[in-house]
Image 1 (cartoon, rainbow, N blue to C red):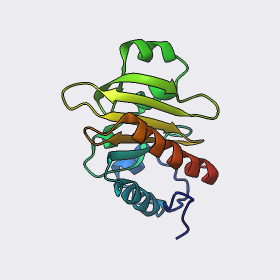
Image 2 (spheres, one colour; image 1 turned 180 degrees about the vertical axis):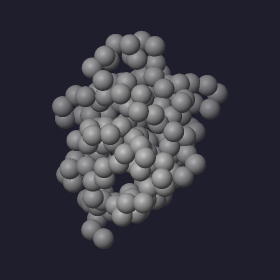
Image 3 (cartoon, one colour; image 1 turned 135 degrees about the vertical axis):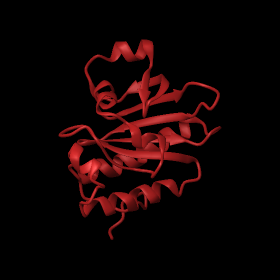
Length: 166
């Protein structure tokens, strides 16, 4: 298997449907995404990861089994990628059903493409969303991990996904 500059496996872009997601994700490219998810989770600072489609179909392509980010809904993807930025900047947003405060929103900006947030509550964690041409990469740091570290990791991973066209 070929590897990216960051040492992560290169994966073929995957398209999914809601039925495909519910049916157990049987496509062959799903295996590549599972390897990618495993490689990302080797970083001890990352607690959860999800690859979510946004261009064709807003569903979770791959995630950590049993993780919070596996529950990201199409409505949440629509809010993240939608044109109305003011509403969620003022009221916050929800990722995987968990309320978050937005720290920095450059998700739709050319050249950056990353949104930084922090979950609300006693178990607050850094959440970072990266924008690739057809997918969003969502990472959640472990408790106590600074958001800047998660942000840097997302930038490196998104660079690799953009080079692959995912």
